[in-house]
Each structure stands twice: as C-alpha cells, then as structure tokens.
Amino acid sequence: MAVGHGGLWQSIRMALLLLLLGQGSQVATAVAAEEASADKQKYAKVKTRQRQAVGQVCAAKLENIQALLQAESSPQPERLKQLVTTLRALPDSGCSSSSEKSQVYNLLGYSYYSLEQYALAIDSYLAMIAEPDVDERQKTATRYTVAQLYFMGEDYDQAARQLELWQAEATVVSGDGRVLLAQAYYQLNRKSESLKLVNAVVDETLTAGRLPKEGWWSLQRVLYYERQDYPRVVAILKQLLSHYPRPGYWQQLGGLYGQLERRGDQLAVTDLQRLQKQLSSERQWLSLAYLYLGEEVPFRAARVLEQGMAAGEVEASAKNLETLGSAWLQARETRRALPVLQRAANLSDSGAIAARLASAYLDVDDNSAAVREARSALRKGGLSRPGLTQLTLGAALVNLQCYRQAEPVFRQAAEDEKLRNSAEQWLRYVRGEGARREKLLESGADLAGCQLG
Figure (cartoon, helix red, strand yellow):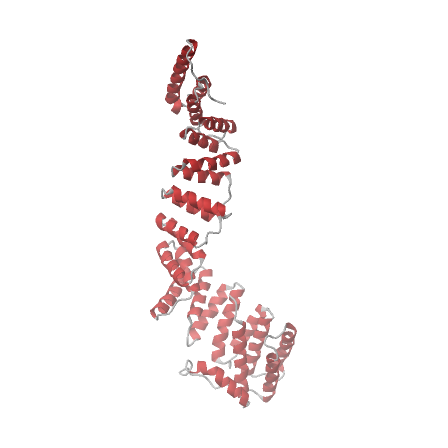
C-alpha cells in the first residue's frame, strides 16, 4: 500500500503554514487560508483547544526549512539528509514547546519517508502524535499515514490499530480508509469483520448513487470466494465486468460457472473471451474445446482447436492433434479427421493413436491404410485392449481377401475373453471362406487373391 508522496508534502506545507501564522506572516496567512478552505466546513463544529504560538527562534528556523524544501519540487536524497540533521537538532535548539516539536517530528517523518527509511518515518510520526499540543487535524491525518506505512511493512496488526484510532478520531471517515482497515482485518484472519466492513462501504456507496471502487468489490469477491459463496462472487464479478472490465474477470467468471456446474454459461463466457481475443494460453483454448465436446458440439470444438493452432497458441502435439482428429470424427467429418490423426500417430511413441486411426481408415474402406496403422499400433504397444486392434486388422485383411493372414490375427484376438465370441466367429468365417476360395481356384475359377500390397 503506497503512501501518496504529493499528499504527504501538501500536509507538511500546511503544517508549516499553520505554525507561521503565529508570527503574522501575510503570505503564509493567504496561502494557509486558501489550502484550509476545503476543510473549514468539515471541522466547523469540532471543538479545538488553543494552540501555542510558535516562538520567533523556531519560526525563523522553520521558515529556512520551508525555503529549503520548496527550492526543489522533489528534494534530492543529499538535501533530505541535511534536512534530517537540521531537524533532529531543533527540539534542543529553538523548537522546544510541544506544538513546535510536533511539527519538527512531522517534517522528520516526511524526510525519512522520502529517504525510504520507513521505520524511522513511523517513529517520527508516532512521536508527533504523542505530543500533547499536536494539532488535532494533523494528528488524525497522520494516523492514516502511519497505518499506510505499517501496511507497507506488512505489520497488519499495527496498521489495524492505527486505522481503528483514526476512525474513532476522524470527523469524516472515508470509504478508502474503512476498506483499508478491512484489508488489514483480512490479513489478520479477522475475515468476518473484514466482510462486514467492506459490505457496509459498498452498500452505502451504491445507496448514494455512486460507483464503488474496483478494489472494494475485489476484496468482497475474495472474501465471498473463501466462504465458497460462489453465487455472490458471480454477482460481484458481473459488476466488475460492467464497470471495470478486465480479461481476468472473464476468466474467473468462467471458472466459477464451472464450479457451479453451469457448463452452458461457462462455455458462453469462455467463447466470448475467444471472440474478444482474450485467450492467451493453451490451457484456455483447450478448455474451450473440451467444453464444446462436453456439450456435444464437436464441430465447434474442432474449429476452436484449429484456430488455436493457427494462432500458435495451441501446440500441434500428438495429444492435441489426437483431440482435434477425434473431434472431427465425432462431427462425422472423417475425411478431415484422417490427415490430422495420421500426423498425431506419426508423432506418438504409443500405439493408441494409430489404433484409432486404423479404425477410422476401416470405416472409410481404406483397408490397406487400416492394415498399416493397425500393425503400427500393435508394434508400438501401449494399448489397453490390443484385441480390439487385432479385430480391426483382421477385418481389414478380410476385406482385402487376405484370409490366411487374417486367421492368426483373429486367434490372437480370441485371447481377450471379452472379445472371444466375436473373434471365433471371424475365425470360422475366414477358415470357411478361405477353404471355399481354394477349391474354386483349384477348379480353375478366375478369382483375385490377397490384395495387400
């Protein structure tokens, strides 16, 4: 949580000017009146105690410091180190009253912050707050600054403590401050308190007809997600997409629809990401393709995979090509499936893809190719049911009138108990048909032999 550099400098300028008012500086009076006008109405009804006037010695030194700081819009480190040395000596050399020291500590806090010495900045600001005569408005504003610095150091317990005090002291409590406290509670595992607080801020903002900030809804989303209240998360994501559209929110919404088993909505959201060119990983492209397959729309699944491969987002690996080929097969686009599955089979060390390809070739009556791929599948191995591929091989050999070659293949297939009946039927057929053809050939019939090249 970064602390606003410009905001800190503005508050410090205001502090210097308020001090210098005690010495009657006309320029300081004019500028201070201008910068304080925005807060005048807010603090009109707040009772404040009489502040001590700044002594002449301290005022002169503070004027010199103001001139030093205003010499540059963003003071350089060496100048700030000089300033720190000067400020550290002031409480013992002219700025000894409580009111004066509070301003010295304030400037020290700013200087240490600018030097990125955050622990020292916190110590200085806390010393300022502890002064009895500190300006109440400055004290309250500084608590918020200290809380932010604690946040930067991941000291969420102290950040929450300062924010609770700030909330109790402030005349006007901003939504940002309350949500910052909710974030601290979240980090401290006080999640019920965190949710209650951020819900109140969001609801009040919506009731007032204003738009909640993106970070407020985001914190709500995280808290409800951890409660597994997915319908509420969906509603928040829709708000975020309406007012703060980001690709990540579409992805999260699609994932939530999946968890809610709203596959149609998940598909619609994911495909919308594709149309908006927001799919940026292979996983997202494959997820969309599998969603189409799950919804029994294989043609769209195949087109998504082709588009992803053409865009270089989906690797043309054996597995992905097999998925593409299978999608074309399911879509009854066998002619499109065959070359894709052939590429996949050539890339794979396992015989599984070749076995599937052999079956596809058999379906389109390309028996020679079916024999080739079935033999390749059996040679490569890795088949969960080799008997099925043996049946495919045997059927292709039969179609090519290669009965003698088919017989041992069906005998091997019969070793699979679940395939035994089918394999034995094929065996009886090839033996009978083989014997019949041999007799016809012996009698002089003109019959074609095995057509396997």
